[in-house]
Image 1 (tube, rainbow, N blue to C red):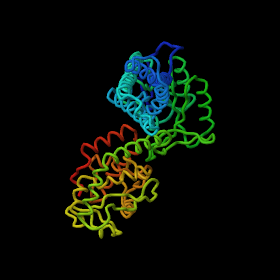
Image 2 (image 1 turned 135 degrees about the horizontal axis):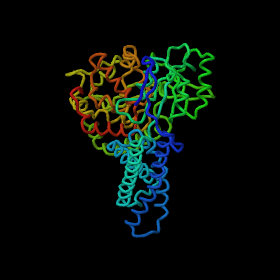
Image 3 (image 1 turned 120 degrees about the vertical axis):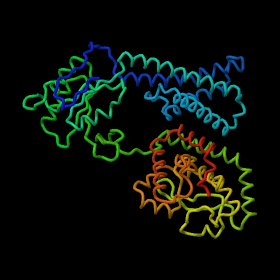
Image 4 (image 1 turned 180 degrees about the vertical axis):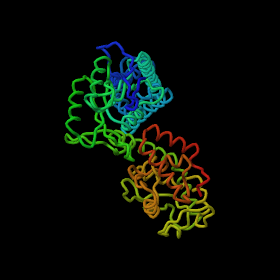
Length: 485
């Protein structure tokens, strides 16, 4: 990779390549590959379903109800796979991640279809053998398609036809910062051909002629350049406009980039609103299909968990009544989505008098307010089971930042910068902080700060795969913890 900074003041030593008019830009290849995978997943639904149908029923005459669920499955699989980023080419060759996405995407899709059939009272009309075979063959076909596309992209990358040649027009330190952000050691996909001074000519600048915009124009006619990044100064002048006019002569993507090195928040993307360009700093989490998918996950899983735990919950309620006076359920106002108040349900684990304390002091080890059965419930987190009702009502989610008592919320909001960012999504029964050990009593602000960091990480990196991972870790290690008392 040939890279030049303005401090070197030397001509470029870029290896020339034969000009190829048929060369396809990397993003076009990746876009085509992503579209191909999407189309293959859609086609795999009826193909896998029909193959397994013939194998199961020994007939090519497909019943209407099976044809209907296959048609519906095409839409469900495509949207679920898109929601979990199964068409993201960046990690296509990370086989473990791809396997999780394919199996998870098909698994969630089949679960959604079965849920629809259940509420339509026709789920018993579909053979479990056929459903299982359809899932296995469909997932195998999607996986095979990704292996093939990954092999093709790998071959294109090895031949150098998948790389992006980038030129940077700007002064240091901006240019060096941009170069570090778009490249890293061992990367063969982004290739910086050089850094160019934002001047049309070299006269009087003390910069080598090949390190100017004029030199860039000459270089672009000798070798393929795909992207040009131009420093956007705070004050634009005639010379800056002249640079853009010159660059407009090239068949290249030209991008304006402001110097945001002193901004504490990393911008996410550029958007437009009513023909006005804007830099997007924060995005609304869980929008569009992601919101629909997470709500479907909450409804299906919370309903199944309530049915599964119903006998245990009845037994816990009876034990609470026998152990101490007071109601079975403890109702406490807490802040939920967008900092709006909700009433969180829990099995009562303390004496009835303790629940009337408006200051809501946190439970400590050996706390006398905790009842005998309450100590077991808190230790095993079984006191949280009634919150499945909050999830069904839409006030909470299975996975998300834990809601805190109002008094605690107001205190930590003043102590921790960005604390209220936790409320950009619904609170959860379990979360990324809890499965990483940050649960129970927070003895100081530092402990709560670490919990908040985990919550914000979850919000900014949400995916269905992350939700399923948290739920799995909760089942394995999350119920019993040394901080729960």
